[in-house]
Image 1: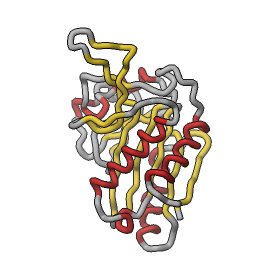
Image 2 (image 1 turned 135 degrees about the horizontal axis):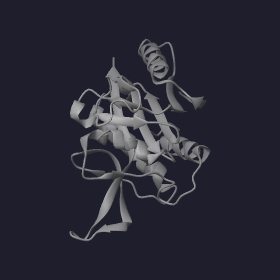
Image 3 (image 1 turned 120 degrees about the horizontal axis):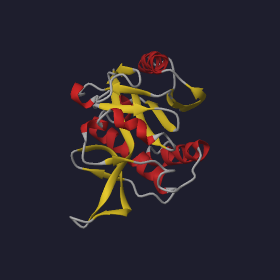
Image 4 (image 1 turned 90 degrees about the horizontal axis):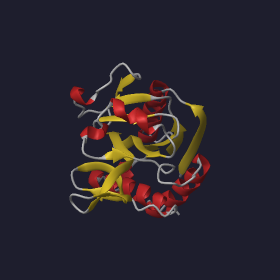
Length: 217
């Protein structure tokens, strides 16, 4: 049984972390169901366990939170759907790499409902979109922009943190960091791609795709 929690308004990052850690502990103890929590944060940067201080190019711009999730610097803010994933990976095969691939597949399957082709790239964390409207003329390839980030932590085989998908955030806010340590590619959103998708639309697609990818039925 996976409980779905959707929060309106902006949730402070530290409050979210406290909630996730408590819920993950309760799941590990068999005292609570697994949970997916959908929310938005106020504008902030988080530094994962592999972050490089040089990638924080504008440290005074927004609050910076140290995070125990994997990965490097990322941005959260209004217009971005954050999905915190508190699942018992111990009961789901104890294969962290396979679990991360499921999270990637969840994002890609969700995006496909809006005719967006999300892709994984070797050596690049997250989900990417080839901008066929923006060819890179020198190489004949297309510009690739990041549309979703993934970063998790496990404690007693229960996951927390999770994914974020850009619906309609202020993309200029990403300029205060080098997102995930990658300099040669940009960031996009569903609205930036010309798709007037609402947060509610995305939530419905996330729920439907989760049931497909994680086979919860």
